[in-house]
Amino acid sequence: MTTPSVLFVCVHNAGRSQMAAGFLTHLAGDRIEVRSAGTAPAETVNPAAVAAMAELGIDISGQSPKILTPDTVESSDVVITMGCGDTCPVFPGTSYRDWALDDPAGKGVEAVRPIRDEIKARVEALIAELVPIAP
Image 1 (cartoon, one colour):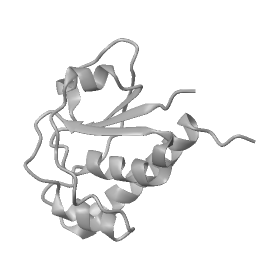
Image 2 (cartoon, rainbow, N blue to C red):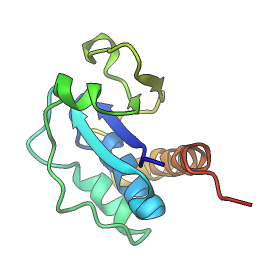
Image 3 (cartoon, one colour):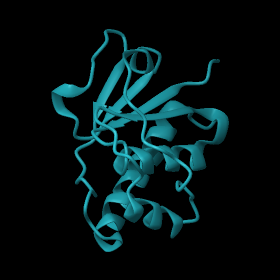
Image 4 (cartoon, one colour):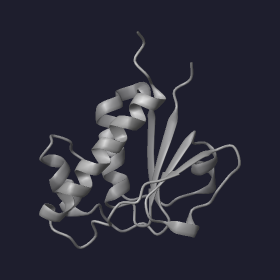
């Protein structure tokens, strides 16, 4: 069985997609290939997102926003968009999902925590779907 690949996409690749990638990497280990990118990447990862993830022992401070490329989308099994609307490229044969989540840009860590917690719940459900535990 091949390892499934998941691509998280948001506009700036600085908050939501970075937190989702951090959770998926932390919780799934090498069972799922994790990618993240943005349609208009910021210069750095959102400090409030970094702080919110650090509270749970997950370090995303070493990550940097990356530009979304058609190749990255085409080579991913599941693409999860988070507010990039029509700017995300779509390819036939790729599974797309849109997670409607508030944008943490410009918000403090207190406002980012509920977004982080929602992302964690969705990532846990995604892991259960993509790599079910054998009986």
